[in-house]
Image (cartoon, rainbow, N blue to C red; front, side):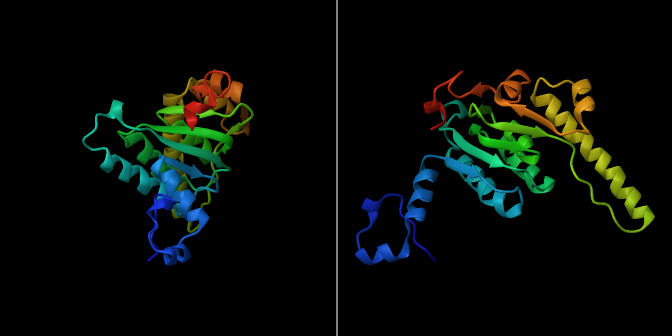
Amino acid sequence: MKKFFSDITEIEDVSDLTSITLDDLKYVKELRQRKLYLESEVDQYSISDIVHQIMQFNVDDKDIPPEERQPIRLYISSVGGKVDPGFSLIDAITMSKTPVYTINTGYEYSMGFLIGLAGHKRFTFPNAKFLLHDGSSFVYGSSGKVQDQAEFNKRAEVKIKDYVVSRTKITSKQYNAKQRIEWYMFADDAKELGVVDYIIGTDCDVDCVL
């Protein structure tokens, strides 16, 4: 099992240098700073470590009042992906007593958009983009099974709509009107609709997400 070091000064034996890489040191340093990254498609592999770290930070902070805890920063550039793993991460963020800040560093599309909404504070780079649209439904099997899947998908769509409306200024009427199209937004659109709280460089300095 690879041994990790939080700082190069912890290495006492030069032979330890063969067991680590610069990427390892960068990873550990950023974990110490509570920086997490979602920079790929959303699936079980890309979110499992993020979920684990959010839970672990809450364990570490157990005896600290929530308002005094060091925030977790989740940097997002994702085209989206699978709904079930995505909502696992959403649940981890929204349940976290330690604040989780979401930062759109380039694009939050589809499931990435929904994950970004989960942040206790939500930031965006000034030229980042957003995309909200309905999900893909793959139904197959016998006619009865297809009907069951279709009914379940309808219920899932209602839950997603309720989630979006509850965390933004998007109204139910606006959501229904845009649901079947590709609804792209720039940072200023997202700010106006309550998708994000702060545009970096306009509403706050870059230091607030570092």
